[in-house]
Image (cartoon, rainbow, N blue to C red; front, side, top):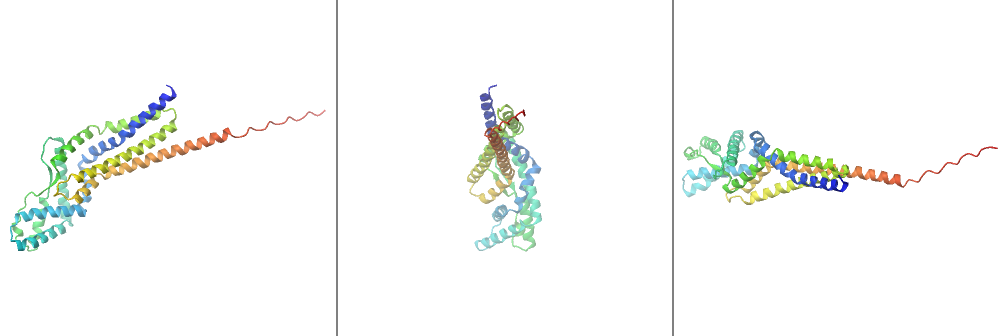
Length: 300
């Protein structure tokens, strides 16, 4: 194969591998982290202590309680404030973290069923366990009307029908390609190195392509965050949703930096070694030839 053809083919394979790298990372993340209950719970467990999420839970539980308690206007404001403070205080306890884990696991199972089915109902998080705990606390503190609080399913919307439809389409594609897309990326990168006429130049291009793929992945995560927060319903806390998004996509951001740092490191090493070899050849080419040795004259 001519040298020029090999170089062009290597460049094409490397470019394809660079473009597929972020898609492969997304597919693997969606299937092996978001689709796995244990890894999902580990990623979202810190949200139980997030102040924005705790405020959102306190607002939702308080609103659900106040809808069921009918008091006059003079008592409504103070009772709402007292209830909200009690719920907010409860979100700092171990009992709340247990309730959060149970509710979050149920929501995750619901999301997985929703993306695999064709339903149109929104995905919600049931905070009834939190309401039950708050009711017990208010009754214990002697709050008026606390015993009348009904413990019903107070649901917080996690995914609206519109967002669910987009998520379902994207998730199914990523799930189907979660194995062969990363494998194809590695195969294309290896093939680009093998057919290249200059291996060092191919390694340099592969490193830059890997870094570019990481940068594209980071841009995709940032754009997804902006779109997600922009399309939220007005009654959903933007700060809480941002905390949830950041927790769920933490692995993707880590992969982004790994690809960028690894790719730039490989490219830098290839460039330095190539530059050193060039300097060595240049110095050898310009080294003066050794002077011919004089033959000793024969004695008469």
